[in-house]
Image (cartoon, rainbow, N blue to C red; front, side):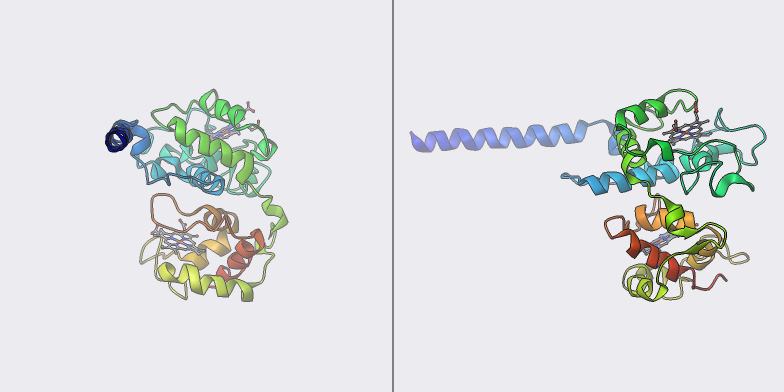
Length: 256
Ligand code: HEC
Ligand code: HEC
């Protein structure tokens, strides 16, 4: 009697495992298309993934870049094409839009930032991303990705002005402390001098040092959340001061 129960139990378990497996196989192909997700996703992972999507959602989700220029991108703006669909292009690396680093220069749009959305319900933010003037459809940003993006906007922003001197573009951190983290974490891929990976070309190379000096806000966003579409670590789980110390050190690396 007992063994028959056990046998039935075993069959049940096998059936359940099959259902889970099949559900996985046939889950939304759109959500499956993008990089691996942990089964027991933590809140900090959700936020970092959202930060990556904010940077360049179509690279994270491995989708074709959107065609044409975003309808809400101002005609007077200097950019066109796919990049105008990136959240950062209108709202900035410092999340301050026209009131931050994009107040002037080739990225100027006159569009406000997203700082006012800190702590707001993710559902409200998600709705704004789906509706005008945004109009991001499910075919562009899946529901699963939308949730992460909205969570990032609500919980993942930091006040960069607190950590980066806007005029001097200097990180308010300790390069000496940052060097310890850089050498043990970043150097594996970027090299001790930051020149192992060149983001541009031979003629006009762009290294970590180049980006960190020219655009500390972008560098900080990437230190926290990673780089879309490539395997790079996200250090958002470290203290903000650790992240700023790394930024301070990268600002000492060679620019060419
Ligand atoms: C082409 C430019 C453009 C792009 C790209 C863009 N936005 Fe916006 N966004 C706007 C404009 C314009 C507004 C202001 C709308 C208004 O005030 O009615 C706005 C407003 C917002 C707001 C509300 C801010 C507030 O204080 O009310 C949030 C949140 C937001 N955007 C998030 C995002 C996210 C996330 C992305 C990327 C998926 C994104 N936006 C991409 C143009 C853009
Ligand atoms: C596992 C490998 C890996 C590690 C570790 C890593 N990165 Fe990266 N990182 C990459 C790759 C790959 C790219 C993209 C290179 C390209 O686009 O040519 C990249 C790009 C970047 C960029 C983007 C530059 C741009 O303009 O697009 C920055 C900034 C950066 N990394 C900083 C860091 C820092 C700081 C650390 C340490 C906290 C770090 N990375 C750790 C692999 C890594």
